[in-house]
Image (cartoon, rainbow, N blue to C red; front, side, top):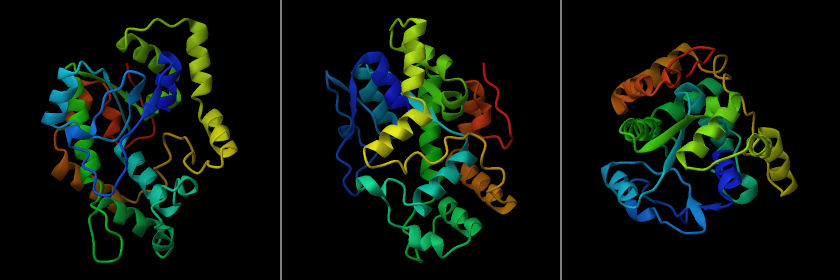
Length: 251
């Protein structure tokens, strides 16, 4: 979604590094700058990465999501073999089909490498979010949330334009919102032979799927891997990304 929004306002396409096995998201060498495209990937803005972005005058826009919704989304990524049509499926759907949904979600949350699913748990994703918010809190990046993009997209589009020093008319904002709508992108993906990437596009679907036990496991991972995440989220006005509730409020 954010790729479509930035493309719509800049006229640039996006690119990512070659996704080879073992690629290090904390290695600044994997960040490449081009004049005719913008970089878009899941890197971790550790100190070395932050330094490279600042030295190159990069305008970084990060998107984060409520940690419980993120966990559920990651479960479906594996259980539903998302993006299999474009050769990027994880091919673990049979493994997850052998588990209950509750068991499958717990396997996403915690590291366990003895049962054929080599996964590190969500600690790395939580740490990544903490580093993104740390960078933004220092004034070096713009933070958007998936929730805001879904429920208040026009505001997000205007914030992106301001951050990138671009001027948009209301008609341009409306056109960008339409082009980046979930239904629009889903239809285009389906016409191109894909579509599984666009599963639901909802912001509050985790309440009925994450048990009390798994909620506690997520909190343990948060305390262990990203103890400063909630503090940064509150400072940036997005405390809901670490909260468990049905509604979201933001400035």
